[in-house]
Image (cartoon, rainbow, N blue to C red; front, side, top):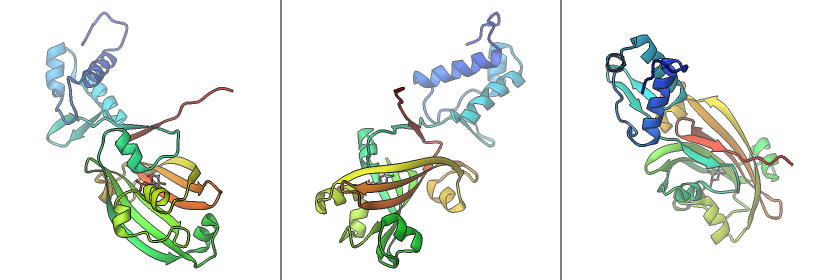
Length: 241
Ligand code: GLP
């Protein structure tokens, strides 16, 4: 792992070494890495140097520390391309994960002025307010709150939202989903999000807000999704035109 004659700093070489052990599967998620003392003895270097390398990898999210237990390899992040308008169920299935949802809240409420204007409906008209934890292989990935007009999409039940909402809109209601606009920003998890996403207090969250429209331009949904930043990353491909 270490070449003392290399122009690269020692801590960078250790970082690169651990990184490639993770990439080639020699170190797997939740494996413990050797202690600072072990690395220091093995490579005849100072513990400070080892600590710097490990801290950099912890800050990057590749490793995590547990007090009194040691340092471990993190789960790899799910990488999602920001192309195409897909549902959570489709996204997870495409990656070979089993999607599921835990329903936290389901109610028909009168639209507030804000929701009404976002959905282009009258104030106080009925809207579904749905909050679900979205899971992949049983692990919470996001909390999502959806608002949808109950006059537009009729007959949504708890059983339906345990499955796929987009599937219900397209298969049962026979409406065509057209396009969406989405914003993505970084926030700190609220206490509620911390609890439901099983992350530490103060963890970073990727907040996505989506406005989805039917093919004829009718607003379909307003959605706030809080994704775990330790499990998710988004990629965009860009053309210079
Ligand atoms: C994604 C989107 C939401 C959408 C949901 C539908 O998570 N961010 O805007 O409501 O997919 O997912 P499903 O069809 O699995 O219920």
